[in-house]
View 1 (spheres, helix red, strand yellow):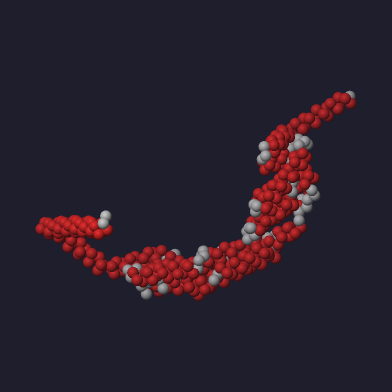
View 2: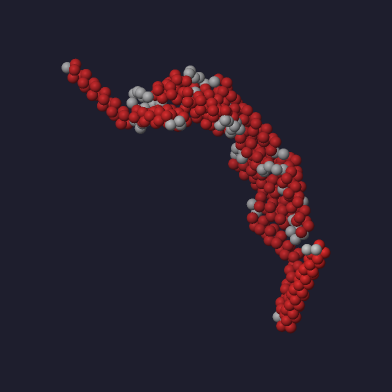
Amino acid sequence: MKLNLSIAAVLLGSLVAGEALADCPGPFVADKKRSYQAALSFEKQGKPEQALRSYRAAEGYACEPVNPVEADAATRAAPLGLALGSAAEKSGNAQLAYELYDAGGHFAHADRMFMALTRTRADEPSAFQAAHEYFDTRSIESFQTNNAAAIKASGAYKPDPKLMAEVIAMPAKGFERAAQREAAAFNEAYLREYVQLIQSRADDVTDAAAVQRMASAHQAFAQKWQQDDPLKSSRDALQAMRMWGLNGGDERLAKQAEAAFTQRADQHAQLLAQKYSGAPKLLDDAMTFITMQSLEQSKTDARIRAIRAQATKLGDDASAKKRYVLAAEYYDVADELTKAEAARQKQSEVAMQKMQPQIDAAQRQAAEMQKELSDPAKVQAMREQAEAARKAMQQQQASSKAANKKAAADLEKELGL
């Protein structure tokens, strides 16, 4: 009876194991063994990096209870990972160094390279999120368990507290850098000069000298302010400030970031509308600074309506002064599309009126030429003049050739050649 029970237990255990393996998506021990054999082959062929990556693939979890090649794979991977990772680090390839150190089980070295890569993206909140998750994973007990063979082969491992502290400090430092970038981007000297440039534009597009002066002024302005749109840079920096607060995991920083974001965006909107409305684009920027804030929709709508009304009035003023191009741009900001089209049409009509004398003169000249070409006698006279000019040119060329030939002969004679 005991024997039968034992057999039943074995059969039941086999059945359960079989069901477990059937449900397991892999990899299986057979896969691990194939990776291990491939690694040995790569090593014999003098391909250490491929060997290292294959040894790493041979380690770790398999569906069966025991991975028989894991320990040997980790032991052989350790020296390869250290040598290859060190070489990549010396060459300045931090990404490759990280991968090779990690594959060799040298996790402390891999952490150093990971942080070197993270520092290159220190102004991106997403880099903080990735680093935070990375060290969280490295710190839990399961990491030690899952990588026991690699840690045994390469030496004890624990995440460096200094690196973890650096990660924790990233949001506050990132917020501060973003605030500094924003303050530098919102430059009132730029705004003043931009308004002057727009206000000094030529209204008469038929005045070639004025158009040339305008082109030169635009070129000088672009050379002085060699950068992307400063107000877009300001908004990007404001959004970065806010994102550091939202993703930093620090409630105090979150409140500070949101308050600074709202205060600066609001101040910029007011300043642009009140002080720099001489350029239509800056009124449009003012509306953007308003809409990016987390205001009640009714408040946002009211402020946008106020700026559009301001733009409409400025467009009317410009139109009264016959500055139709400027007026059309203000109407665009005000979303007064009909008025904008009318202003552009008026500008076109004015330009055509100023160009009409030149058009009339050109038409008269063309008519006179057509009249002359329709007179056979005049056409014949023009042909005879052309023929006479051709013959005169041929004679001149012949005379010049003969003179050159005689001069050469005289020179030869004089030299006794």
